[in-house]
Amino acid sequence: MKRSISVPGVGRVSVQPDIALLRLGVLVVRQTAAAARESAAATMTAVLEALSARGVAKKDLRTALLSLSPVTDYSPETGPRVTGYQAANSVSVTVRDLTSAGALIDAALAAGATSMDGLDFTVDDPSAAEDEARQLAMADAKRRAQTIAAASGVTLVGVSGVVEGERGGAPVPYPGPRAMAFKAEAADTPVEAGSQEIVVSVTMTYAIDA
Image (cartoon, rainbow, N blue to C red; front, side, top):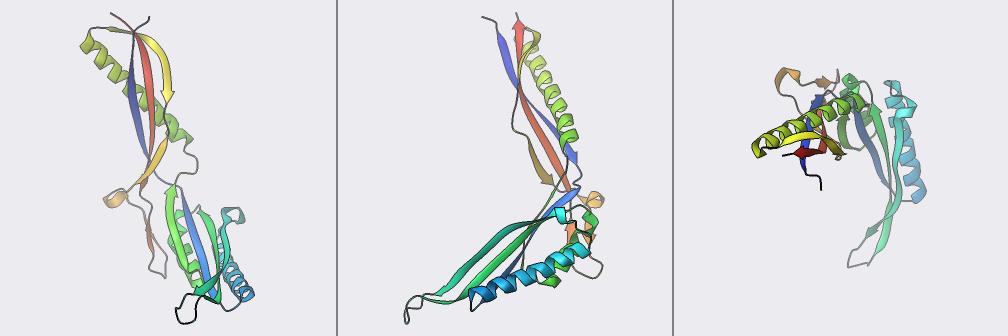
């Protein structure tokens, strides 16, 4: 039976985000279902027009939620009764010009958006950063294997197997002057993109000789 050692390796690469993912919503309550739906649709149309006017392409706008539900009053005096209808409509926006992020948020709110559910910065195409992180992970695993082999008095013969773990990416804010701060010219919504860390993990198995 061939002897071997298995070691983990991790590679990390910090990259600057080049897109932002934003979710904007409209929530209205009206006495009838039709009125609630029409009001939400009209307001969302105004929001979409405001975003388009600021350069957001149609392909970067996607409806994320449509809902219509009754508003029920559970008063003990009268018992359950429907007092109106609530309509919700939200859209996911891909922001490709990060310098416009703050202005887009303010424009959407001014057009009638009632909620902003998250603003996430990411990399549109992380493949190059992932390749770099993968190479770093394999180099890290090799270094560990060499250290273990030397301490154990054995010799590495060659790689007999490589398994890549799940890739990950997490936003890591840059301190000081490297932080990117954006602000709409006539509004008070500063936005910081920070950086994102691309992480790749591997497990490498080496055949060994005594």
